Image (cartoon, rainbow, N blue to C red; front, side, top):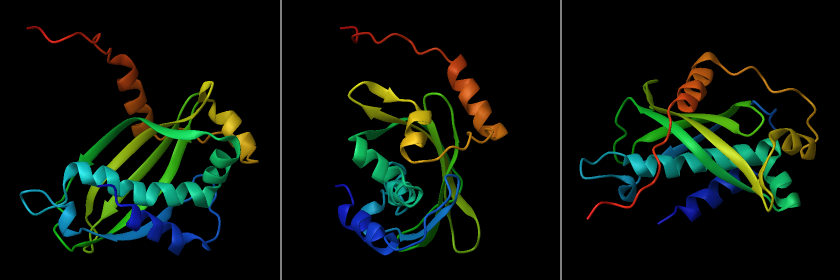
Length: 181
């Protein structure tokens, strides 16, 4: 089940925090709960992606993206992700999450998020490609920035993000086929 209560809690505790610049870092804290674990008593990899929502959505609010989405009746769809798992997160362990937008191009916004253990180790790290969507399809990030009253140009993509974008573009997707009987 989606952690709506935890999300509402994060939105509540961040409601009065100052706005962030577009590429500012939102820091939040979370616990690995019993319903987040897998058979090995550690944070489930699928649940990790859901918990990242608990940092990304408040970040979107703090940079002004949520109000722009509401105003225009747009949505935000995840169009790709690459995650690296580095350290286990055990039940009841507290983690610090860092979330920020790192880049945008003519079609997508790119968000970086990471979870950090109390000892300073990075537990996992992810890059998301997100699309703002409307009735017309994908909304260009330039139009989104204009709606948010931001005139600044997109930052240069970090080398590792540019490499991921390039590798993804070079990897052709096989056509979908019905399974053979």
